[in-house]
View 1 (cartoon, rainbow, N blue to C red):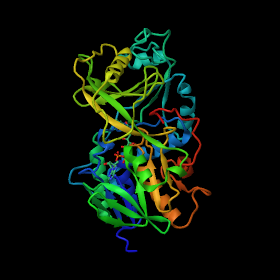
View 2: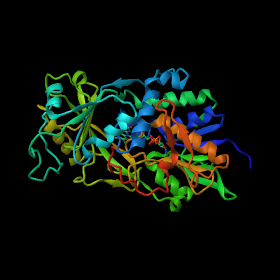
View 3: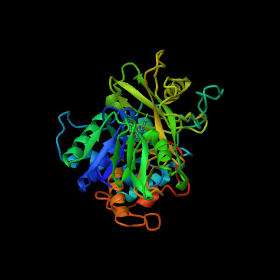
View 4: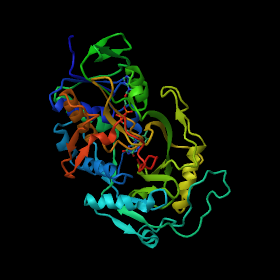
Length: 435
Ligand SMILES: Cc1cc2nc3c(=O)[nH]c(=O)nc-3n(C[C@H](O)[C@H](O)[C@H](O)COP(=O)(O)OP(=O)(O)OC[C@H]3O[C@@H](n4cnc5c(N)ncnc54)[C@H](O)[C@@H]3O)c2cc1C
């Protein structure tokens, strides 16, 4: 059969563009196709783009740590200029509150020690001394606003926190995708936009390419599903769901932007905050505003979405709940009368850990289930996917003998089998956006 490309990547979000870049660097003739008009117009454009190192598993911490260095050295990693400029990493530090759900961060600190990451282990008075604008009383475990306990301290002060200076966010995640697109193109990779994949083609028991909504067919021996919240739909098209023990679903998220308390220079003073005691994460954002997201506390009803192209994109009571939760911690935070922020979808796996894997259909791969926590890991995810494709197409049986990959900066070996579609649910996961 005539092959138009060596590999087709479905999706041009941050992980799709990183995968295209890494495959093109290895000499694959790649095509990224996306139904949107530009790179990063899917869930990536609404990401909070937080770069943090604390995950619930040592593998999660190591991948985040490794990726961190790519963001620090972004221009050199890309190796090309972009006429639109480069995305920038903004360092803020990250304060992670200890609580029962994160096991007082004992495992996180052990993983950070192993990775030689500097951090401070703060008691409640240490938090208060460094961040006097915080109310350090305990409010958790979080409850919904209709619970009479809502907003009432539950006794004593939070057990402490870990402050990790090396954390921050990327100022323009859509630009980061454009940067990756340009870097991929510099190696001969191609992009096709406004192109919706409606069929995964097969021939002789393996993948053969894709069919687009306009009827055109594009042939390649490798197809990678990086469809974000549409991942399950694309896996269904390919007929690979039966071979997966871990599946993916779209989940609605509301992110609030609210003005900082009057007179407070939040951008100057505040770090990223991961606060399971109030069920929120937060970071500074433009205009001296605070970005507030949910850490998915067990009391909240999650809004799973059947059709990612047709769901309620309005704010709900969840928006107000998140701001009111944040106001428990941040002294003087007002609740604005008008909502501001964004609504988008996570692509959540059953254990909130991504799937970076092959499938039961030879030649069909997936980088899916990114569970609200993989923007930061895109550079390493792209590398893992390229290594996986290379080795499996070279004849390796990844299911029986998982591919491993050396991590350059952390000097560890990544077992790509950790991200298998066939794994059992990982009991160490937080089962939340923390991963
Ligand atoms: C509100 C929110 C906040 C987040 N905050 C963070 C954070 O702070 N830190 C962090 O690390 N991660 C965060 N994440 C997660 C992170 O943004 C995602 O993991 C990452 O952006 C996913 O990238 P992707 O390339 O896999 O998917 P996407 O960016 O969603 O790209 C998938 C692409 O596939 C295309 N597509 C789908 N179906 C088809 C089809 N049939 N044909 C053609 N194209 C198709 C879509 O158009 C889309 O452009 C957040 C996510 C959200 C939604």
